[in-house]
Image 1: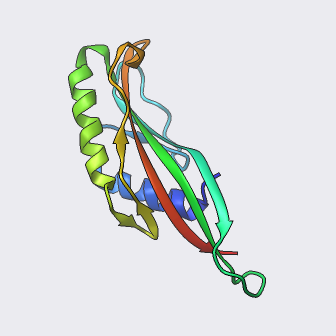
Image 2 (image 1 turned 60 degrees about the vertical axis):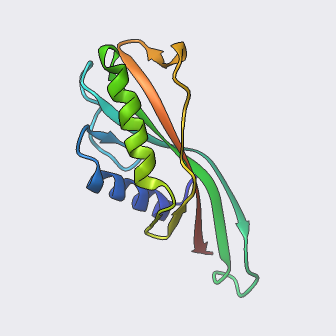
Length: 135
């Protein structure tokens, strides 16, 4: 699981810069909007942690290396908008350091018939990151 401080930094930043649609994340109490209203979902599918320094217990630096994924949900008729929004979101994180989270080269998912998901056209952005913390 991603460190809660990394989740907080990522989701706080995204909520502060993204106003086009609601953002549903781990820390969000807001329910998903009724279909076909657009929205984003943030999740954290991969996190690996390793010790970077050796010291007194509780004073070691640990590095989380992982990815977070942002999925854009737009009504089917707005596939082009979903693709454009994925590009905009990727640019928001590309090479940025946000609250101690170092984001690397964000990548956009494929655009093909797999993007058709019920009432929505879903695109995704995956952002690899590093986050150092003490433990």
